[in-house]
Length: 448
Image: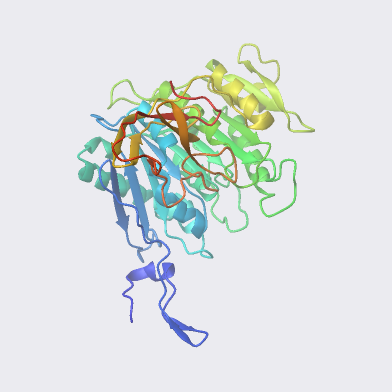
């Protein structure tokens, strides 16, 4: 048997060969099984051998909020390096919690998946100058046609990136400062000096200093744990933030006190932080420029020099220390959430999640629909029959709070995707029952 492989897509497949005397046919690990039916859309591009273009295949999955008329912006969820992280990008647009953020602001949610082989050079996509910037912008133009939303090709971006995705998101902020609403950089930043596997350092453009940026990393990435595979992450982040703050940039650091290179509980600060930035910066009219945030309208905080413990944040007016070395946050609510996160990652939430809708019964199978709690997402669903609990659908997460969609190392749902479906195998034929489904967010609050 032979497999037809186009161009450099050969990098993503293991060729036909002999293994222990048996002829083996390799399978492309990036085959996508998820459908792309509305409200989901997908485009995919093969690898290119042309200089300056992307050397890996890539797919872009997009989600549109129901009944949206005009897209005001695009929330970008960018995975990190390595085959596992790249594959995780296939489900990013399906994340209910990130959809809640996008929907609130009439934004699309897009998740790229760069088909990088495990041991191949990550810099060939995570540095956007190597073709991924061009591929990303092409995807928006093509998706604008596919969805019937021409504004996708010009809408501004709220960027989230993990590891190599942090490098990519920061690089995109440098390349397109007039188009980036905000950038959250988890465990990765654009290098500002030559380093290992980073021969092409970035120069900070003045316009990028007006973009709200938050650098987030785990304490085990060189902050309080200074050895191990990811120990140099802190060195890069600290240097990057120092350089940016010296130019009066709107930037801060959030240290996760529990995690390493995984994403931990960061979404409970990242999503509210991006929500605050979207609220402050999205144009009042779809075609208008991004609104600027003033540094003195924000709040300042810091990290203790000896323990890296968070210093109590203050308003710009009340901050007593030097502002040029302080960490910047967009408002009081986010500054106080940052303080909570920095202590134990347990960012609080006092609002219950939305109640599930469209509860239906076909035979003995119950299905429903549910929006995620913007602040805390969805942890589980409780199913009741005639007011009595008969079952629970819950999720897992080895890296933080349990999530209904089973959160991964890279902050995306795991496959196969969790479904809102429960089978009542104890229901009796001919009996009439009343079913109710209750959503529970990740701080334990139940829907009304």
